[in-house]
Amino acid sequence: MDDSSSSLLNRLRALAARVPGGTAAGRWLHALADPRLRAIKTSRRRHGEALFQPFPDTWEERYPALFDGLARHLAPLPAPRILSFGCSTGAEVRALRRRLPNARIVGIDANARVIAFAKRRSAEPFTEFRAASTIAPGERYDAVLALAVFRHGALESGRPQSCAAILPFARFESGTAMLDAVLETGGWLAICNSHFRFSDTATATRYASDPLRLPGNPRDPLYGPDDQRLADMDELPVLFRKR
Image 1 (cartoon, helix red, strand yellow):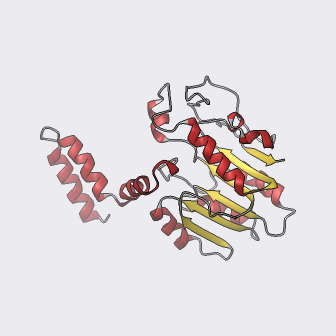
Image 2: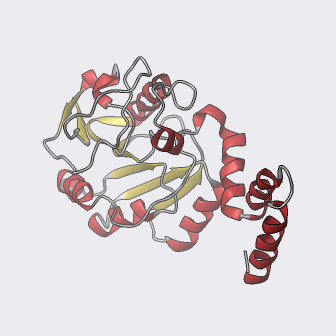
Image 3: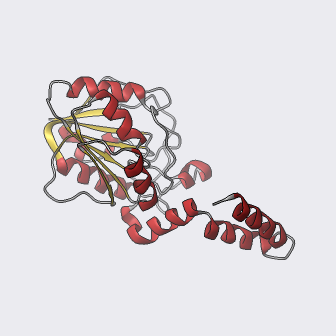
C-alpha cells in the first residue's frame, strides 16, 4: 500500500469512527485495503481447519540454538532433506540454509503472499517453496520443523479456559501425525512455540526427546488433550528423534 492509499484509508477510517457502528466499518475497510490482511483472510477461507496459525509473523535467526542443534544432528548426512512446515516468508529456511548449505529444503505455508515473497528472496538451488497446508503424499524427510505453527494469536491474547472453539487439541494431534508420516526413522522433529505439548500426543510414543531446551518455551497458555488450560510448567523439549 503506497503513501497516498494509506493516507486515504486513514481519512476514511477517521470519518467512519464518527458515526454509529463506524468503528467496525473502519476495521472492515482496513482489512479490505491491507494486502497482508487480505492474504490472511484468503488463507483462512481456502484452507479452513487445515490452517493452524494464520498470522505469518517471523524473523531470521528466531531460534538460533535450535537451528544449531539440528544442524549438528544432520551434519553426517551429505544432503539432508528438510521440511519447514509453516515457513512464512522463508526466514527459517534461510537460517537453515546458512548452516546446511547442501540440504534439500522445502518450505510450505498456506499463505500464498508470503510464499511469493519467499520465492523472490530465496532463489537458491535445492530450495523449494509451496503455497499449501498439507504435504504431498510419498515425500520423505530427515527433519521436519513446525515452529510457531501449532498456536493461535487469539489463544495468547484472550487466554480462554478452553481452546476448543479456536484451535482444539485434536487438530494438533492430527497435525503432528501428518508430520510424522513423512519423517524417516531416525529423523528429527522440531516443535517449538506451541500451545500444546508433543508428549500428550499418541505420535510421541515413537520419539525420544533431545536435551536441548529454549528459554521461554512453552509459550503460555498451554492446553491439554481435554482442551483445558494447563498450569505453568518447566521448559519443554523442542527436538525429538523418531525411534
